[in-house]
Image (cartoon, rainbow, N blue to C red; front, side, top):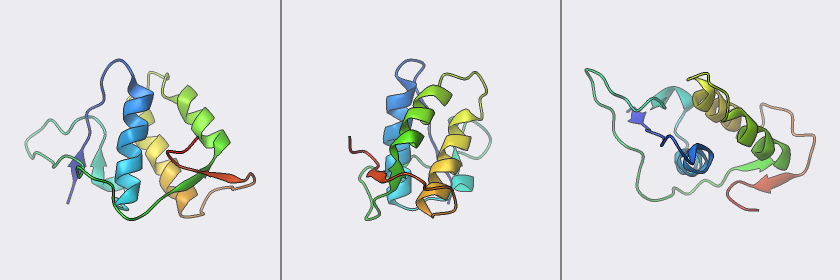
Length: 105
C-alpha cells in the first residue's frame, strides 16, 4: 500500500513532523510514502487518521536538524528526513545522544 502526503507552503516543518509522527507510528516504510502529494495516474491513500501503536524516539539534535533541513529547496528533502527518522528509530543511525520522545518536547 502506498500513501501520499501534501505539505502546505507555510508551516511545512510542523506539518511534516505531524505526518512523519503519524507514519512512523504505523511503521510505514519510507518507500511507501510519496511526499510530493501523489498526483499522478495511480492515486495513493492518505495517511491513517489516528496514530498507530509505535512511538518513535529520536535524539533532540535530529529534531533541530530537521527544522533546518526543511528550509532547503530540494523537493526530496522531506522524504530524506523521513528516511533518516526511520533509520534512527530502527537504531540504524548514530544515537550518541539521549533520545527524546518524538512528538514530545
